[in-house]
Length: 89
Ligand SMILES: [Zn+2]
Image (cartoon, rainbow, N blue to C red; front, side, top):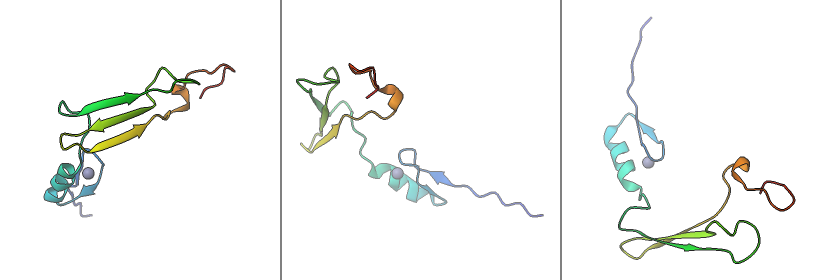
């Protein structure tokens, strides 16, 4: 039996894999990571209804004034708060 060990590199941000290390370095540098100290984060809240305590939208304003908006969504049913009917959102 012959054994070959093949090294794969993986992008730490998106998980893309390649045997070509340079390709993965390019992949990592192509991602813009939000929330750095130069970004402004605007938060908007719902006025009524459920989950008014959490921001409904987060808008990241990058140093070049690009704005990227993310809307609230529960990623896991168990993360949701109980509503008035005792159901998880
Ligand atoms: Zn990547």
